Image (tube, rainbow, N blue to C red; front, top):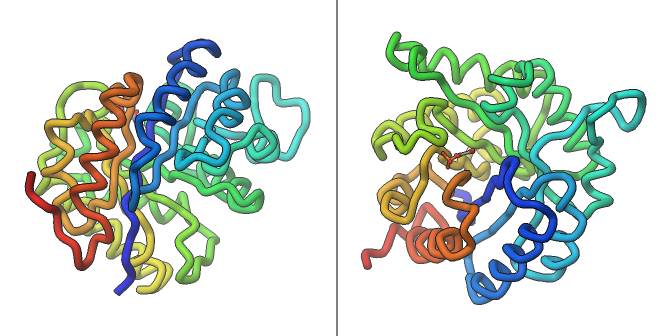
Amino acid sequence: MNRRMPLIAGNWKMHKTGSQAVEAAHELKSRIASAQNVEVMVAPTFTALFQVAQILKGSNIAVGGQNLHWEHQGAYTGEISAEMLTDAGCSHVIIGHSERRQYFGETDETVNKKIKAALNSHLIPFFCIGESESERESGNTFSVLDKQVRDGLNGFTFDGQANLVVAYEPVWAIGTGKTASREQAQEAHQFIRGLLENLFGKAFASAVRILYGGSVKPDNVKALMEMPDVDGALVGGASLDPETFSKLVFLITNCSNFKDDNPCQSF
Ligand code: PEP
């Protein structure tokens, strides 16, 4: 069985000016310096990427974009390419976030093209999927996830190298204060891993990290991380305060390094 390193990512969304992002990056860097057996990523706004990446260079915190366009360059006002992200210092990129699907016309087809562009530029995509409240209530959670995964990853081949991260983010839990129960999260993650195994084989499915996102906070992260298929968290609101986000990083570190044979320690 593969051993999966826990991963926590902070999505700063459209928050923080350049100077505020710089301040947060300095604070995070010193607070998280001693964290081990965990991967950490932050995704600032585009205007702060370069400065934040300079500050975090050589640290244990990676930097990611919040979106990209699939073309290399061209007349696409307001867009940013994979190459521009890597040039700014990014190693990761969030793709298909529900806010982009909901407000900016992101579809499974554009997500597919964006993942392809990211992988071609050696950026690790955080592929976001998740059902809405009405889809869950009508019993369609698994069919929605099934379609998002199949269409988003259509045409790809993956080997045992998990250069993709999946983020399961139930839309009803994002920014609402409602978190999926640990059982709901595990059920969805297990379903997604099973589907990835059918599509790409066991080696890939057992290596790929599946993060939970949706109102993750210091008081609920441990319960989620105890579940066998939850490999970390994609955090919005609680990532904006460096003190709270570092608390999450250390809780995850203590909780479940290397999923299969080190279960969560109790505090
Ligand atoms: C997110 O935006 O990916 C997210 C999970 O937000 P929040 O933690 O605020 O629910």
